[in-house]
Image (tube, rainbow, N blue to C red; front, side, top):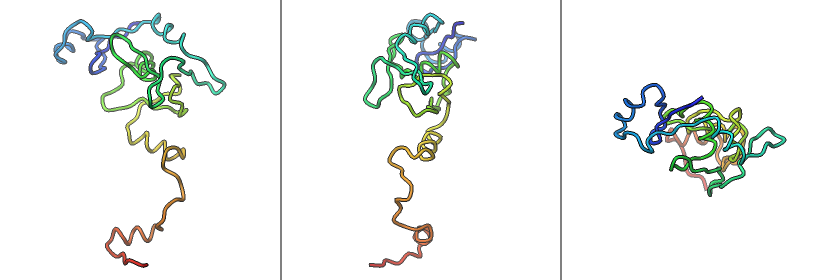
Length: 155
């Protein structure tokens, strides 16, 4: 199996590489990235399977805690590269999200495509991040009155 993607816009170029290259304004060279099963096997040598089923990256990690790798003169987050190798290009404007909330996990079954809004909703639903439940200083009625302009300052 071989997948050819655009190294700039990550679009699938397998069906018509020349047409896509011209549309992107680049032709040949490092513009295309091809992945093979051998490269997937090489990537997997830097991973460890955990008891939770995560496939954790043991290579370089960035400041945000995501696994990083350089492939074809381009730096990739490992989970995005793994998604691209196993499922094809990530659609423009979407993200590769983790079901397991483990930033160094690159197990394809733990990854899904979504928007930034999906990611935030997932974070809130799981009680992660700075969003915590029951920390509001206003009741729903007080907030509604404030938004309706009916709020009176009480000190």
